[in-house]
Image (cartoon, rainbow, N blue to C red):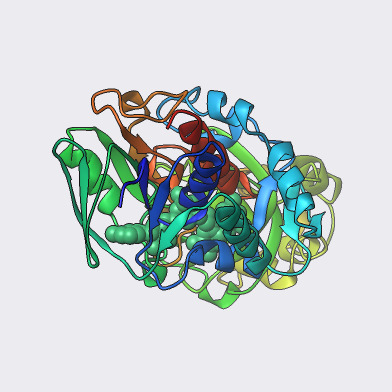
Amino acid sequence: MHFDAIIIGGGAAGLFCAIEAGKLGRRVLVIERNAQVGRKVIISGGGRCNFTNLNVTAENFVSQNPHFCKSALARYTPQDFIDLVRKHKITFYEKKLGQLFCRESSLQIVEMLLAECRAAKVEIRTACSVEKVESRQNFVVTTSDGEFESPQLIIATGGSSFPKIGATDIGYRIASQFGLDVVRTRPSLVPLVFSGEGFRELAGISIDAFVTAGGKSFRENILFTHRGMSGPAILQASNYWDPDSPVSIDLLPETDARELLYRHRTDRKRLDNLLAEYLPAKAAERLFNADGSAKALFQMSEREIEIAVEKLDNWQVRFRETEGYDKAEVTLGGVSTGELSSKTLEAKKVPGLYFIGEVVDVTGWLGGYNFQWAWSSASAAAQSL
Ligand SMILES: Cc1cc2nc3c(=O)[nH]c(=O)nc-3n(C[C@H](O)[C@H](O)[C@H](O)COP(=O)(O)OP(=O)(O)OC[C@H]3O[C@@H](n4cnc5c(N)ncnc54)[C@H](O)[C@@H]3O)c2cc1C
């Protein structure tokens, strides 16, 4: 059997690349190790797949080269994907901040991709695991089902997160095998674990906060967990988190903390009781009266007031590690963008070898950006096959 291109990985990027290449008349084979394609799509967005974001810019991605994603994102836009979703009569809604979710089920996105694959005559082999790749005359892919050969090979094997649904590091290994640089990988869009003693008794409590890490700030909820913190603001910050630096949390993003405390400077009530009007009471007590020795506001010295203001405005929280790939939505790092053409995603040193989707060192924010990168990078590669 002859194929113009073999795509390893039947996830978002692999399927979409196959569709776009198939529409251009290429004979394409997709190889997927799971029995079912698109398993990450199915579990994404809490089962509703946040398939894109209305406000996609290069600013929403982390990469050693922040400009790399621009070309692909400009050529296949969120509107292009929305048009496809509409063509398939999938109803969707904007949840918040431009995030588009299926109204019914993420399965509809997989069904849409499979219908498009059928129309583009894409061949898909599931339950077929790639074991190794060699470059002879063509690329030779050894799988659990035997060998396949083609002049062009697209690596769409995703990142290492959620290994229980099929993620492997084979994409990074293939890059290294061909002498391509891989930017150090780590779990991201992931809950963080406190250094030292935590706030176990606050597990389950969420607070609207302004979280800053690595110079980027996010205004969304933080959520205390048994070991650390989660919630959208912390997941977003995890993309920028440096283990050696604390994360800054503004607990009262809507309120001027200094003005509030000085306005109540002569009150007979305790600080934690005042703050219970602005924060969940349990959090106010644990964070501002942990040992039960909090004074009434009128008894607090100016220095004590200032310490409280600092903690409200700029609470410095140290995290020791992430909750790991089992809980991470994505993998930060990946195949270095310096090794790839931003126009075609082809490896500069290895003609015919492409890397698309999450395996590349382009990581989006939470909110549909990672799928948009999968669609856009897949489309960019497909145009040049
Ligand atoms: C719980 C969760 C929720 C998420 N929700 C969202 C969301 O709502 N919106 C959003 O934008 N992003 C979301 N993401 C991130 C998003 O799912 C990924 O960024 C996206 O799926 C990446 O697409 P990909 O095609 O590059 O990789 P994947 O979708 O991971 O596909 C890679 C495929 O390669 C296959 N594969 C791996 N190794 C081999 C091998 N050796 N042989 C054959 N096949 C192999 C895998 O089985 C997999 O099917 C979520 C992630 C998780 C884990």
